[in-house]
View 1 (cartoon, rainbow, N blue to C red):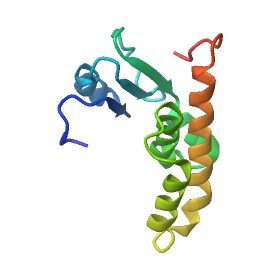
View 2: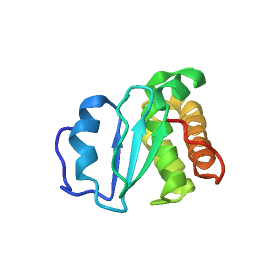
View 3: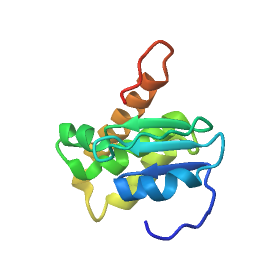
Length: 131
């Protein structure tokens, strides 16, 4: 997404290297940076933010469709910062996909769950980060 609505976000999702370079410095202190580790090699050096590395494209490919990487990382966001309820996210997906792409509903559900599971594992004390 090339246009920022917020210049200093509390949460940013970066899916590729150019986005990492552009948006990582803009995240507010105490914010959250979610990084698609499958496509981004850079590691944040910031100590004032939480960074979660999610191999979103790899997880999505394992589910059978690498194009749902954005849904995987949205699941990780939801597990890290519950900005909406899981049910409201599922409802929005159903509403958006029922008519145009109903075949994607099942894989999107699995992608959300996979992203949430990955984030939950990363947040557990004693578990080494995957970066």
